[in-house]
Length: 429
Ligand code: ACO
Image 1 (cartoon, rainbow, N blue to C red):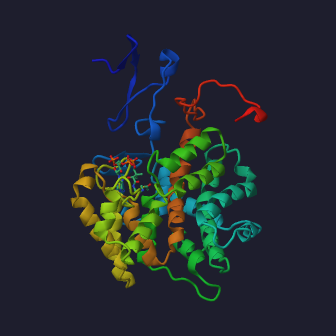
Image 2 (cartoon, rainbow, N blue to C red; image 1 turned 45 degrees about the vertical axis):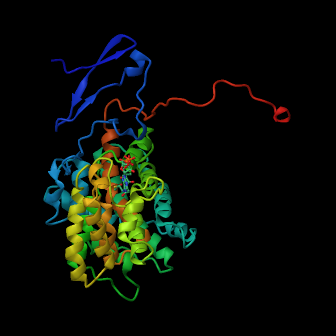
Image 3 (cartoon, rainbow, N blue to C red; image 1 turned 135 degrees about the vertical axis):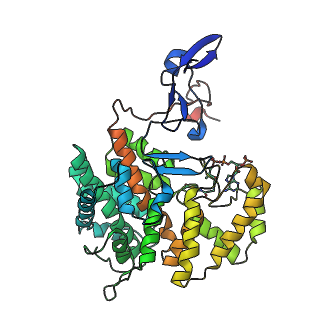
């Protein structure tokens, strides 16, 4: 049996090679389809389009499997370490003790921002969305590091990646401090990645923030569960921008913008809004679900459904467990957790959700955990960005190292007017 796919168009037969991935996924290679047949494919939303071959993350959405560089996501649950996962995603293997030590040292050494960057924060209104500040400031950061515009070799790239992964925390924390009118807190080199971030977020000049080990682990887990998800909207954006050979910082700034949307990273904020509405008695869980099923309402059950997962999102399972465990430890009794459980229960028994294979996704419980830790709602998507950054960097690097990499440039089917003449202004009706 031939491995080729056969296409018959206008009575003519064409053969196209079929590629197979490590886990048996198959793809018809249509790179020369237009040249040979004059046709293109039409796939709005790219649900059936493989934009690249990638060795970073594997997802089996039917079975609810997620693996980073082959390692099942559940295996990071016991001793969650975001920095280790960042290295794994970017460099393809778990760091040796020495690699880990050196990378951690690079992160620590790079935590500070150029002092004049503080003035940029002052230029934003207090009410500016932190995602807007984050994207703008990542671009601004590149101006302070022109040495990373062109990356020559892996050491140079590692320095740029460490700089970005470290400084994104500081930018995020400063964006928050600016929004609440509090002084910026400098990074503390004695602290690890997550405690240092919480220190910049919550310490006061007169009072150090103490990071409980359970909180440190929960944030490490949240960040690492968000660290990569193959060709999602923001990662595809980073790849698309990077395909024009735009630098790493500019490409990741674009990724932040893509993540901002409520159908992507912004969903974690939308979930909290939805739970709040129900909590405030504006609508019952049953009525909310009813509304989400009504096509005319434009309401969706936020934190439910996924383009790839047609089964439980394994990240949602893990975060659901963390929420149950952490809230009592922190002494938080959050009615929103009960409402979330209720919504989940109703939806999982409703044929509308069952038939469409809509399950809780990563955003369903992450907000409840972050809220219990004291992270303000408008910072939720920023937290997602910090988590997703290593994935963006890994994909940007993978693409830049791929031989024969092309600028991303989809085509279209034009459905506008046929050729028509310009009419001078005074002759128009
Ligand atoms: N609530 C109600 N109905 C839904 C939902 C939902 N959350 N999600 C999908 N559906 C319905 C659609 O209305 C559609 O119904 P139809 O077949 O009768 O037309 C069907 O399920 C398929 O939905 P699509 O929008 O075609 O699925 P798609 O793969 O394009 O969208 C998405 C996936 C955007 C995640 C969608 O499920 C959604 O909007 N969910 C809510 C937002 C959300 O939680 N986003 C976070 C995603 S995870 C992440 O980005 C980290």
